Amino acid sequence: MAKGVWIVAEVRDGAYRKVSYEIASAARKLADELGDEVCAVLCGSGIEGKAAELGKYGVDKVYVADNAALDPYTTDAHAAAVAKIVKEKDPAILLMAASVQGKDLSARLVGKLATGLATDCTGLKIEGGKLIAVRPMYAGKCFGEVAFEATPAMATLRPNVFPIVENAKAGAVEKYDPALDAGQLKTKVAEVAKDTSGKIELTEANIIVSGGRGMKGPENYNILEDLAKVLGAAVGASRAAVDAGWRPVTDQVGQTGKTVSPNLYIACGISGAIQHLAGMSSSKFIVAINKDPEAPIFQRADYGIVDDLFKVVPEVTAAAKKILA
Amino acid sequence: MNIIACVKQVPDTETLIKVKPDGSGIVEDGIKWVMNPYDEFGVEEALKLKEKLGGDVTIVSVGPARTMETIRTALAMGAEKGVHIDDPSLNGADAYTTAQALAAVIKTLPHDIIFCGQRAIDGDVGQVGSVLAELLGIPSVTLALKLEIAGTAVKAQKAIEGAMMTIETSLPCVITTQKGLNEPRYASLPGIMKAKKKPVDVKNAAAIGVAAAAKAKVAKTVPPPARAPGKILQGDDPALKAQELVKLLREEAKVI
Ligand SMILES: Cc1cc2nc3c(=O)[nH]c(=O)nc-3n(C[C@H](O)[C@H](O)[C@@H](O)COP(=O)(O)OP(=O)(O)OC[C@H]3O[C@@H](n4cnc5c(N)ncnc54)[C@H](O)[C@@H]3O)c2cc1C
Ligand SMILES: Cc1cc2nc3c(=O)[nH]c(=O)nc-3n(C[C@H](O)[C@H](O)[C@H](O)COP(=O)(O)OP(=O)(O)OC[C@H]3O[C@@H](n4cnc5c(N)ncnc54)[C@H](O)[C@@H]3O)c2cc1C
Image 1 (spheres, each protein chain N blue to C red):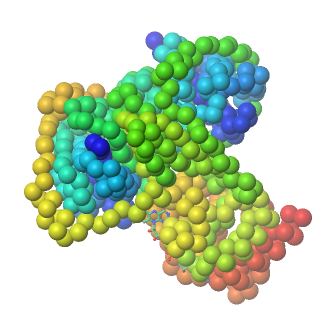
Image 2 (cartoon, rainbow over the protein chains, first blue to last red):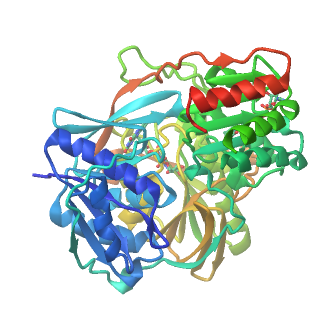
């Protein structure tokens, strides 16, 4: 019988991505309820030394595939490596990050393992000894509770939603041979061009300052950037701002952009269209600055200021600077 | 070049979604159905490739009778022919089953490249393209923002967190589309007229040899959690409101 709660840890450039600790913590919680073990799969090159660290977040055992073909990430190498150990050990539950990599990997694993996957989950629970994964659907207009008819029951977890909990366990390390067949690896990474502007990635930011059509033009985003600098925030945009060519497409938040879940989302000159809300409504706190009191964004905001953003935002920056100095 | 574009019919994004009182799904009355926006990028990229390299574009879709409209839209944009898989057992099927049905059809067609949307905006599951590639035993590149084909060599660019990644692979493969890949064309009036006469094969699950067996199912649909009403900061002085906001963020929300 399938047993155990497993995760796939995500590393980039030799370091864990924060979401790996979030999924480890979430897995621990489920495993404690089930009276089971948490195991992690760690794939990469030269990463064996990092494996035991996962013990700190409740992982009992880490299976490590250390192989040059596993760095940088490619879909076929990682899917083959994870599928091999999962097929051998037969876990009941397998959790991954709803990151670019985690979504790509998990979907390919659905095919390899002939199982079910709930994408981008914001909640997990156990009912009758089985996983129920809670996820937003129809752009967050409703939520679905997904049940599974096959194992492992797979879910990807939205970054920044599940709390990181330190809960020291053994973190025992066991190496395994991913048995990669070079002839079957058909994709390769030709280049990774890092954004060197020092920009904080939207999906990883704790705070996002976002601007829409109300910003009036690309030249005005400096007031958002000033605020972002003081708060250590990333700067996002609505589709209206992206379509106008004011901001790059990678900055777009929403249904056809990025899904973000920061602790604080400050929407400036954004009306709050349903497609925009789809990408940010799981933020923990939402602030709206908009001159139209009827703007739908105010229905979602925890704090709202009805006023001209060009007057308010610089004052917020000044006040934040004072308090954070 | 044998090009395939998978399209799904979804509720228009403006649609008001109402959960059925018994939590068994959503109320479908009055929904306006459209082509999944990401699939428009897939159809557009397929047509651009055809225009550059020759060949034809086949549209494949799984869905109830109304899905035919969406297939015709893709044909009106310029695709040559369609396959419509219509079977009650596949309505609301999970991603694995849907990919199985698509794979069963695509296996019988010559295919050099297959386009899927990165996700369908109803279920937002984002799996079908990758599962399909796995079932066909071919590589997949998800979230493509840029695509170049030379002979059988494929080069695609995608955005990952904080970087742009260039991936190389080879045909045949599955590409899933991301916003930014292209600007989808509109169907022209002559295109719409011509589409009416283009061939669409309609098949049921038995004809393609797929028996639906769900691996995942939405057991219950619930409305989003109610959110406590927010606080609108009062006053005429932007500076005072800004100071109050910062204070609240610091002391009440504790997020800065
Ligand atoms: C509200 C809701 C929630 C759901 N939750 C889950 C879940 O958690 N897990 C799960 O396994 N299934 C789930 N399903 C079922 C699943 O979404 C589908 O119905 C299934 O068709 C594939 O998923 P998708 O359409 O979301 O595809 P995605 O994987 O998001 O779609 C990606 C692309 O695949 C292609 N494609 C997808 N479906 C079709 C189709 N019918 N015909 C042609 N091409 C297609 C399109 O190119 C599309 O852009 C859910 C369905 C709904 C309506
Ligand atoms: C299929 C589809 C997908 C979509 N995907 C997305 C998506 O991913 N992301 C997204 O954002 N949108 C998306 N949209 C578009 C969405 O419907 C809206 O059009 C868009 O979000 C509007 O952007 P906005 O709020 O910046 O602009 P508007 O709606 O024009 O709002 C501008 C706001 O600025 C305020 N304002 C103006 N001047 C000032 C000032 N001086 N001070 C204060 N406030 C001011 C106005 O009161 C107004 O509320 C999508 C639409 C469709 C159909």
